[in-house]
Image (cartoon, rainbow, N blue to C red; front, side, top):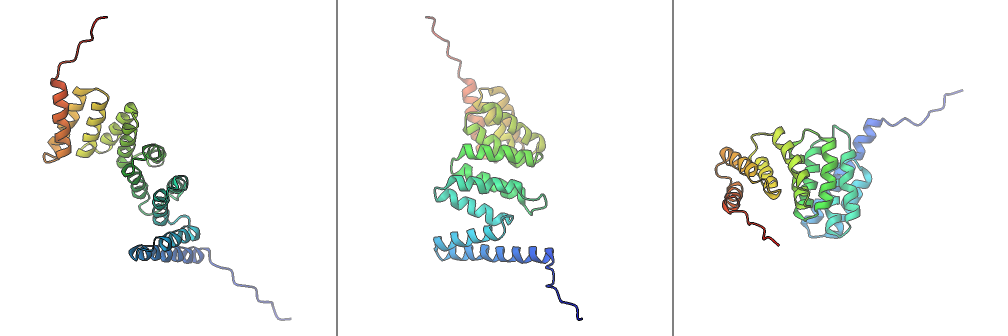
Length: 219
């Protein structure tokens, strides 16, 4: 009796490769639709890419940004945080998480940025840029101690980065620690003498230091 032929088993690696190919094709289609000014087509293609492959980080990042722009922050927040659950070997994952955070900062979504960066530094504890983002969001949220701690960590990880020194200096300034702020801002300018933001912050800091403290009136 002839043997029955079974259906050939699909190779998992081949299936994964085909899934990623389809997701990349949909992602490329979204960029094409955007270039044509077809917002609905662009969103549809992004949604299709994420549905096909939820681990395709560029599509997840793009769709998350779009959802915020469409006044759907809950969905955008969910997509951004899902980046942190992707496998360790995902290409440029840390950079894309930071890009998501920068997007939130640009939109003044500091509370969402704070939550994202807090989770991000747990996943990437040696990523100075993520601590910088955390410090920025914390500072804008009035959490000066957390801003100083995050900015200090960024400087420890990258002590020659003038931007991180400037941010730490500004966090210290906001907390009223003017002498320490002056020191950090001066260090930033020593590294990057043409850094205008640090120069302006240092000048402002020194102006505040030069003003005598007002004495409280006695009742």
